[in-house]
Length: 223
Image 1 (spheres, rainbow, N blue to C red):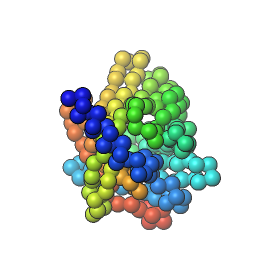
Image 2 (cartoon, one colour; image 1 turned 90 degrees about the horizontal axis):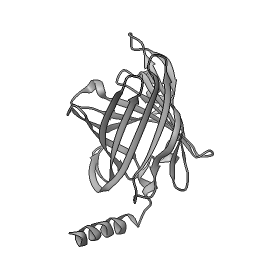
Image 3 (cartoon, one colour; image 1 turned 90 degrees about the vertical axis):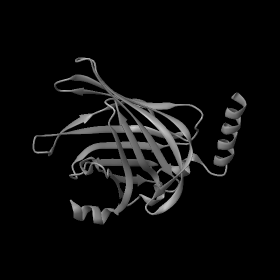
Image 4 (cartoon, one colour; image 1 turned 60 degrees about the horizontal axis):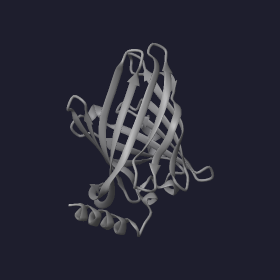
């Protein structure tokens, strides 16, 4: 059994040796003018998300502005790509009022910084802390580990993709509340993140798939 596991690991190494793991992350050179990835939840359209991705090649940074199905922004995420991987620089969450309008900005202070690593040998994570008006300290953590190489169908084509499993946890010490879920993430070569399979603690499952890449000018028309 151990022998078979070693063979499997060796095959993965040989498969990935011809290209960098970085080739499967978001294509920085294609995002300098900004593009929006639509992650569609076909079973529950209200859970569809839009991620506006904008890169800065001089600073080697990538900004993700995440919006819900109603085009209301709920997150701002800035990362820096280094020789080891992607590091968290800035993380802001937005709260909405009863009318669904963006109302409050919550600064999440980065603690652990590894968003994405170019090596796949070991699990890694990023984490943050925020202070909410009513709940006090709120702690967030995301851990990720590499599963293997797979094939996925995206935008009408078949792509090689890397599959990861992530564990998400939000804790509120004041109320002893803990919110957790897991997610399989798929990164296709030349595209970046193309599919998310989420599973929540109550057994609910939800899949979001990349179904459209929208230009910045077209996105502005939809606002």
